[in-house]
Image 1 (cartoon, rainbow, N blue to C red):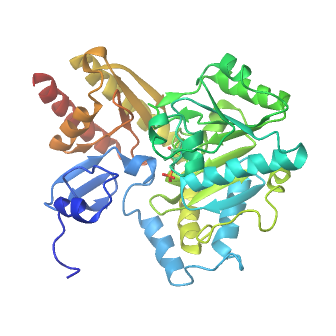
Image 2 (cartoon, protein in one colour):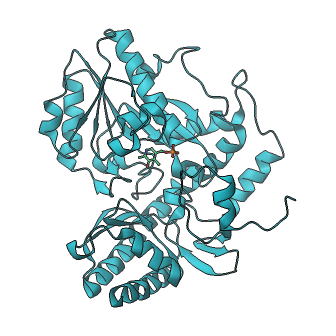
Length: 405
Ligand SMILES: *Cc1c(COP(=O)(O)O)cnc(C)c1O
């Protein structure tokens, strides 16, 4: 029964219809190549949406997983475990953080961050200081709290009433934050240093610096959601280093496990103190297998040569996409940082990002979209140059066919 062939059609029969997956079903991956059920090969510029940061079947990750699988998989939080302790120590050594909380997804790391921000203000000031300022077009996950803090109302439709005390300012517009922030009421400002789902929109240097100053002035915590921008994606371990703006709380997920579900909330000792015993928790958070894999990811990605490699790969990919954009008049701009790139469609192609994704699949290259107007790329941080060139050649063919109609 279990071994009967599975097809895309089965999805509609057995799955909740909240996704609309493509027709192909990938079954195997190696590096930046993927093969589907029919044995067709693709170059992977999706990276599982900025997750498989070391590609597929990375020998180091397989080794870490196997080694830990033979020791111990899971302990409740009644016990701590070696992989979780080691990983937390590494994250504290490599970042601003002094304390770490582990979760299993970006949404859960953000949920912890938002709860902590409220609890911290509640403890230090009072219950009236509970307001959270976030940004239109931002994305922070799909739990009711995180989707409410997120700035895309369509994701909240039909799920109200939403948690209260959340305000949305305009991204890269400091004045819109000034109009909302107050010492009495604001507990946190939550921002993606680079908006991912919202269209690969980088924060301006002055904007992020300004948020830091505003938070200091109003005793609010600055929360960086680095679920997408973190773990080497920008050519820095975390994007906050690129900006030289240090948050009070940072959330990490996606790339952190390289394909294994794990997330972390990083913060200072002072702020962490507000999540005392019993205030928050997660059964799987800090799972030994997950932390062992994440340790290997962090050890690998934090190597200077890997981070430098992200920059050179970024230049190559960005240039190639800009050439394609010019050749066919399809992209107005290629923006983003490192290997999180957004190719913004020209007016003539506005709203048609999905067509580019599908055309790519037909030619054997997997790209992402971010909204209807941006083709998004988030490949492995160690994608071989040859695979970049191959992907560009395939995408060029895809676009030429699309343009020809
Ligand atoms: C993907 C994403 C999330 C949500 O992560 P999940 O693991 O899907 O819960 C949150 N914030 C940002 C910036 C993301 O890109």
